[in-house]
Amino acid sequence: MKPEHSSFSSLPFQIRLISIFVLTSVLSLCMSLFLNQNINRSLETINSIYTSNDALNNMSSSLASLQASIQEYLETKSTDSLNEYYQYEQQYKDLLSRLNTETLDNSSGSMEKNIYNISQSYLDAADQAIEAKRARNTAQYRTMFQETSRYYQFLTSYIYSLNNRQFASNSISYQSLAASLILLERINFLVTIAMALFNIFLIIILVRQITKPIIKLAEASDQVAAGHFDVELPPVTSSDEIGAVTQAFNQMVTSIRHYIDRLKSSMEAEKKAQERELLMETHLKDAQLKYYQAQINPHFLFNSLNAGAQMAMMEDAEKTCSFIQNMADFFRYSMKSLQTDVYLSQEVELVENYLAIMNVRFSGEIHFEKAITCDISGIQVPCMILQPAVENAIQYGLRNISWPALLRLEIEETDTCIRIRIIDNGCGIPKERLEQIRNGNVISASPEKNSNGIGLGNVQERLKLYYNRNDLFSIESEGENKGTMVTIRVPLN
Image 1: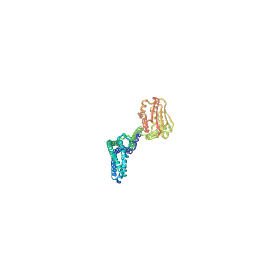
Image 2: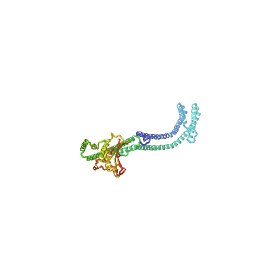
Image 3: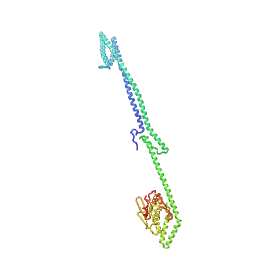
Image 4: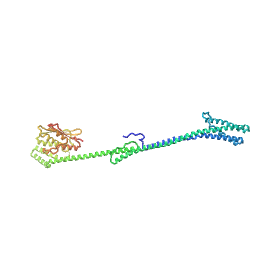
């Protein structure tokens, strides 16, 4: 399962990189705009500090020009001087309109108000002097000119005093603003360094997010390239391109591991199959060797039995003919290779022939019962799996008993197999011997007891190798003189 990630780390690497640089750029821009705005505001304040001094200087200059134009007109009565008077008068009035006319607690405000009031009286006296001059009233324009000169002296003194006062005040403000500008300059420098460090910090984090998984991926790739597929897979820490590459690498390594495991399992299964086949061939060869050792020129014996059967038939000895014919059929079947598959019905027929031969030997004392409750035609089994069990029952179970001997063959079909039971009422099997048989430590029948050379151990081992199962052969006995039951299961699949 994929790990949960934050919304930012799940974004593609390109978008994250652009976002970080845009963020730092926007922060730097906002900080620069904020500092520049404060610096511009301070500069504007500095510029406005001496504006009042400049206005008073202009007022003083305009007042001097106005006074000079009045004096020139009174002396020359020229049109040019009169025009200059009106021009300077309007200019002076404009400057007066910027002065404070309200009553204030500070001295500078009171002085501005006094300048404004005296200037109004000055302008009135100047207008009267001009009008008296134009009316040729010499006495009056001289008197008004003197009044104007007196007001002019007052105004000059007031303007000069106010200018000095404001200059001193503005100098203090300028020093304070100059200190503020120095502080803003330092703040700007520190903010610039802080933003640079912040950018470096973000870049380091981003680079670590990129390089750390790449380094782990490279280390894991080196291990895989060296053939160590059990390497610890690098974790998927993001959903970006690097996370996609890491996840693809992990899936590739996992797939390679599974392929190697399947390949190992296949090789092991093939090896086991080869070993099982080799072991089965060994057992088959051993069984065939025992067959050949137990037979003395089987072809000559088989031909001789056929000749004896023909002779008995010519002499009308039916029992002898039947016996010899059963012997011939038995040897014919025994001459087959153990590697050949046979039908179950042929195995049953062989058991019947063998019992017919044994009953001649035991004078018909072995009673045989057969109970087949299913269709066994077409069912193939390994060769010689029933006769050794029947032979074992006769040789070790029914041979030396004092009660009537009974041998029963049962064949029935279950959900998964054809179950074959060979049951005798003989002397049974001791527990130690039974345990040996169940463990596979079965001692083969000895030639001294007229055995065909194939014991139960060989049958059990061949069933195991043929069907690749361990639960197809079992033998049971309740104890001494309580008989034995051999069960063989033939899988239906």
